[in-house]
Length: 100
Picture 1 (tube, rainbow, N blue to C red):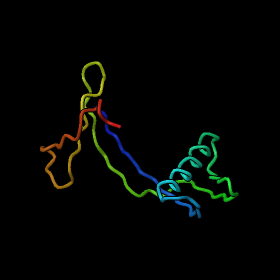
Picture 2: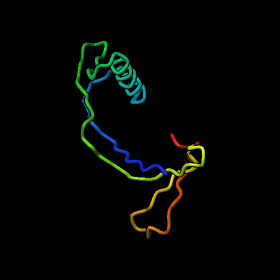
Picture 3: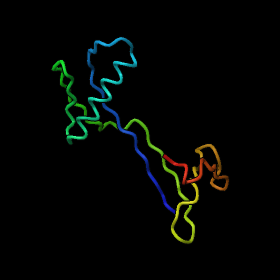
Picture 4: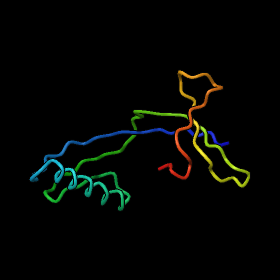
């Protein structure tokens, strides 16, 4: 059995983006972020010269769950003990091979 603690961290930076739609503006920002990460940088730069630092370090959500392993050590399924449920009533979320 694996015990897993998962943390989601957050940070943000505000940009002004000239694009036809909010989706197009989002694509520009996400592409710029991907280029920064590919270069091992936390500085996101846009073609118009805007440059912002984004370094996720604020924990915004966490969860603890278990993963059942078979005899070969392969993941079988994820088990989450819901906070409102008793420990004898595990809530199976999804098979491990379908986890993101």
